[in-house]
Length: 141
Image 1 (cartoon, rainbow, N blue to C red):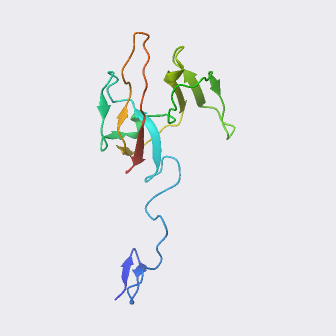
Image 2 (cartoon, rainbow, N blue to C red):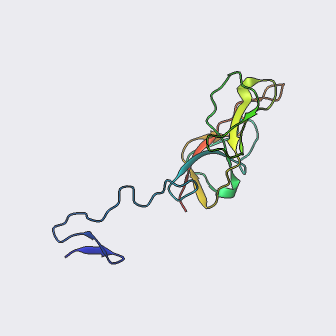
Image 3 (cartoon, one colour):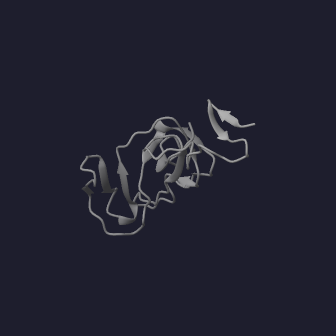
């Protein structure tokens, strides 16, 4: 006997999977359930050295989009976008290039789960600089 979901056969009488879309249940739309982003959770502690393990959850409204940071490079403040829209910025918090960030003005909704360790502020020196570690987040609802 075939098995149907919402009136559509998904397992036929010969026990074959049918009408199954590759990647079913996930989306490739930005902010869709099943998508990923690299971001800081603004509700995390910003105390130097306070990090979070995988599994932390947060509301999408707490996520601040960040690029994966590459470390000590020479970069100047600039804004650009391959799609011709505004909202993408690169900035150096002070004269130390190791504290460079890339972020956008993308907003998120729904519920998100942290898939990697993350830390908003690592060891801070006397010049008020320190590396940050944004996390990889997946939207689950």
